[in-house]
Image (cartoon, rainbow, N blue to C red; front, side, top):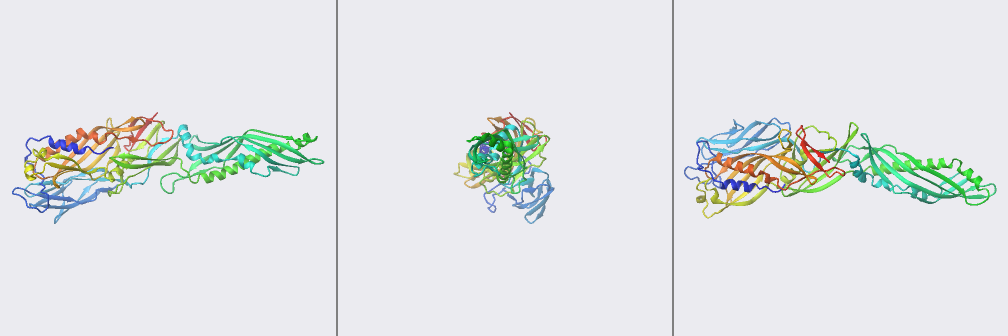
Length: 571
């Protein structure tokens, strides 16, 4: 995502004009005079509300304490929280409000005895939270295919291909020895060792092949009168099979080790031959030597390779990375490091499902318990399908928010005269000031979910307590709070998913104004401008899929019925 074009929305709204912004008979917000204790002009009033409660509610909580302080230039009539009177103790108010899962607005309205009112609405997030940098173990899932396994084999099997049977044979002084004959290796060679991951139903196997092993040896056998020199060769291709079982991660979310079954070794295309190197009795000695030596040599090579492979696998599979992908995204103009790894291999019927864990880390320091996480059961992927957790999007947006991606002081300026029609007398209030500074603050991170109940949309991004402040020479002029919902269609484009806004819902609350105006008209106008320009919030952004080797490109996206995951069809 790129930076908010939010200032432009508000400025356009402020310049649109309202016919008559006077009192419509309903209670209005108080004014801002740039200070809590400054003198008030005749007819002016002031109500200052300072909500000071924690807005991050633990999941499963059913009620929450909303509190703060309030001061009023007129006698205070009371404070309503969520439509019910709050308890007042001096200038402090307290109320218990019901809480449900998700993001919810808590209306707060303070009233004085003269009928004036100040809105101070705030939002609560009631969900689980994932601390930044912590892995979400269910970020994505896919059924392992032969293509994916072929691409994944490199990380798991790279060191295993260092098996050098020919070299180990050649390093021996003695190849075989009994009471009649002794042999030693003279030369040995083998083809390039290969290692592949192979799925057999819901089991994962490692296949190592040592092709075209060839050994030329020489030796001597005791004849009736003297030692008789001999030469020989043996050749064949070796296959090693072992089943792999991922060990449950003990530290973090990534699989870093595997157990294996005792390797099974077979010899293909075996041949063995021996010949005499001189003397009239060579045929007799060849028969003497080669009687059962072929079987013995074959068994010896198989046994020794089995032992060597077991040792090598025990060593190499104890600390290994099968899939480890790291990338840097740019969200809300902030860098976010995204790390993906294999979290689990789970049998599903005769298939094997790979679950991918993801962690996001930015550079921010805003205080929050973590990214808001939507609850819901983990779902299984279908054939040629990747399931993607909406919480992965929430994680990335949280890191960007925490780094100040929705905090833009003095983002733009607007001519002060444009607000005169909304707030009559504003130019007289600030003589010599021609421009207003516009700042934006996102007080809460985004809540993200899949949208099976929203026609034409795949994801919903909900932003609460977006605050827009307009100031003149440092003095507050207008403050608005915005609750914004963006419904997104994820459009597959060039191997990525491009969020496209298909629907917006916004609720704008006028929190403070320096001069009495028509609150409802101001809120309606700003809200309409936000709805018209909300697509700019996501313009130019893309959501990259986990770069799992062998994964197809996205062809279509559909929200899962559970409301947490989206299903990405691959081709």
